[in-house]
Length: 79
Image (cartoon, rainbow, N blue to C red):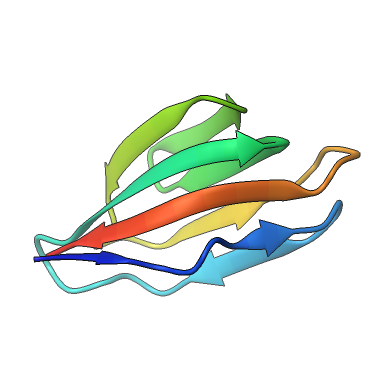
């Protein structure tokens, strides 16, 4: 199934650290405004407005806003 989460907003300097999801789960994110820093066990990705990314969420990961503007993005969890 797929669950669409609320539209998260991270203000400049904020971050969200997540514990791993269940094995086989993934997340799909789409950046609406601002710049999202996605920190994964394999490395860090920087995504600007209009960018999308899918990743396995059965690992430790974090969303961070290192920019100067509020970050808005859509987060979908697939299981």
